[in-house]
Image (cartoon, rainbow, N blue to C red; front, side, top):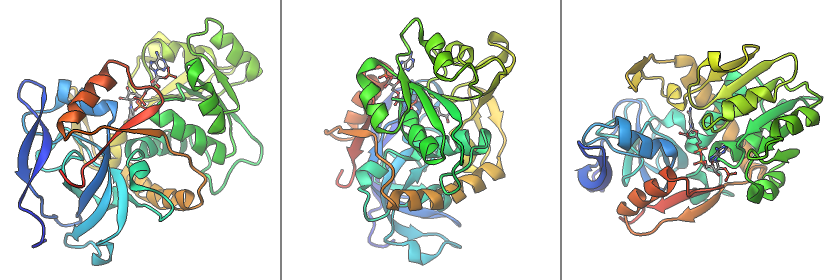
Length: 349
Ligand SMILES: NC(=O)c1ccc[n+]([C@@H]2O[C@H](COP(=O)([O-])OP(=O)(O)OC[C@H]3O[C@@H](n4cnc5c(N)ncnc54)[C@H](OP(=O)(O)O)[C@@H]3O)[C@@H](O)[C@H]2O)c1
């Protein structure tokens, strides 16, 4: 630790729900933690939503990061120092952790080792996307993981497949032996086919529900709605077959608003932290099983990445300091980001 600086720049929340660049302490690892020197960070919708609606003054923004472990706390093997890792931290909530800074305090269980064939820039796009996909596809829908794929393909609807979560989930579902039906704007159809999607429909097409029902012989039973708003939950549930089924959501939605035979199953990536938290006034208790499941997933993910079987979402680098992340928030919140991930190099702030 002696070679690390004592202060650094970070993107933090103001009292009136804006983001600003401030100076914060370089953290020292607590028991069970590591310090990561971030090289790349990636933006997620949750980052601007936290700043706008949730974060209190001084909370450090950002969830997705990739870098190198430079220090370990009590109980963590020192052999991790020097390892290239990427993963998730619960950004926008704490004053002493968050991705949008140079040195981040992190739970090593929620960081995956980045194999040599993968660039840290690409790895930085995976934190929220991969843990959410794992929670949605494997823990909640109970699909077989890629190491034990289905022998007979089964249909799954991945609504809004061009999202960060969608692009990753499509590929995981294919590796798990499913037949993937997805939706996106026309301009993203070729991209989603290249990721393995079997059928791609335009979610703006008035006939989209009928087309999905036809493509699935009115037997669709499984779904993941990667947008979970703007009418998507109605359209997704309407696309299910006559026997109903289960639809995993990324935002909460009232079951009463849609058909009762399609069970809505919302997931929230922060439950993998194994720590209780409050969001929009609702208290979420710690879920140790989600934490353990996510920790196990990091090992599987490293293997899948090493096999070269996963493609990464297209990255667009923002230059111009942490301030440019504020511009990125504006792009994200105004819907100007399509099929790509905004990333930022923080290795020399
Ligand atoms: N619960 C959780 O733990 C969790 C985790 C991750 C994300 N989320 C939430 O999930 C949502 C997506 O996040 P993300 O990072 O994956 O998204 P993202 O990459 O920022 O999503 C961008 C995509 O959204 C699609 N889109 C925009 N309007 C749409 C509509 N009306 N219907 C269908 N698709 C639409 C666009 O697809 P086209 O370009 O094809 O039009 C665009 O490519 C956000 O609300 C985020 O906060 C929740």
